[in-house]
Length: 70
Image (cartoon, rainbow, N blue to C red; front, side):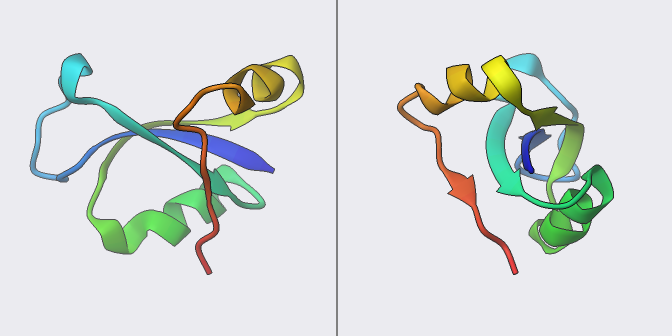
């Protein structure tokens, strides 16, 4: 399943909407996503599953790239 992760680049950074970034991660669950990106020191705001029509919409974006993290 593909998950969209909203985050700040530093876990010391206060969340500010204008500085929020996103990545797409392939994982089994939200917990799996958080485990996979734990070493990146992101301040994760929100993780959501991307499926169905929402997935089709997201795939059309120029910056759509799914990270395959081992």
